[in-house]
Image (cartoon, rainbow, N blue to C red; front, side):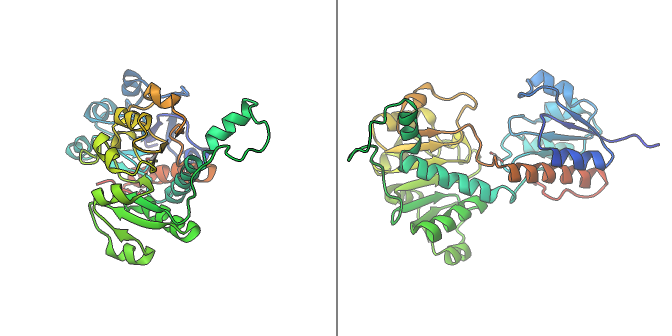
Amino acid sequence: MAKKFKVVVTRRIPEAGLQLLKKAGFEVKISPYNRILTRPELKKFVKGADAILSLLTDKIDGEILDAAGPQLKIVANYAVGYDNFKIDDFKTRKIYATNTPGVLTETVAEHTIGLLFAIAQRIVEADEFVRQKKFRGWEPMLFLGTDVRNKTLGIVGLGRIGGEVAKRMRDGFGLKIIYFDVKRNKELEKELGIKYVSFSQLLKESDFISIHVPLLPTTHHMFTLKEFKMMKPTAFLINTSRGAIINERDLVTALKKKIIAGAALDVYEFEPKITPDLLKLPNTVLLPHIASASIETRSKMAEMAAKNIIAVLRGGKPINPIF
Ligand code: GLV
Ligand code: GLV
């Protein structure tokens, strides 16, 4: 009998994906730890794998690919973002890399909108107030927030997720939508009825700014004190993409000095570390990188990663290649 292909999964993911891999007849090895593997653990764990199912918390570069061995054919990331992959190292070794685009788009868009409302209406702050038993009855000036309708939402990065946020906020809540992207998309502009502006114009005109670009050398620290100073003092920043798009230390300064009104964040520059002062500021909403975390979507992501592995180990091409 032919040797079974070995698939290593760096942390337990939803059963739907694991079942597909097992049904395909592979030997499936799941990390025994319910935590991020250390670098030495990861190197040891991938040894002998034909396929790796990785997480965005696993840095995958030449050293890890070589630790797996020459039989390695694919690394399937259980995420749409793949800034954890050193792509050049995959290319030189001719190893496939895949991600999970599309299936999480609407969930992340919904989460982004949830964050927007949470920060505008001070939902988290107010919830804390109630839990601390401070509610003494209705008050005329208690937790005054900001209306959302008729405001201007600036989308930074009009990809799949940015487009879905734009559509929902325009159709559902009557906001004016402007966007900036390195690639102008006139077709989508027309379809969504939204306007392309320069980055500086977007900073100046937006009441809400939502970030939807991937982390690249060109998007790293796209937001620093200089950009915050161009924003309205009443503006809110929402980030569900990658933390390092923002200089987090500068964001703390901007929030402390009321240069901008608030920030709702799902991601951080040095995850899982968070700049301590962010935790003390009332004008923030802070989530633990969960924007794609619905039961339905995480199952679909698991299946998608598994299907890419199955396609490649059966001798075909991956369904969602990164390059
Ligand atoms: C989550 O951040 C993802 O990239 O899927
Ligand atoms: C990610 O799915 C994006 O293109 O926004």
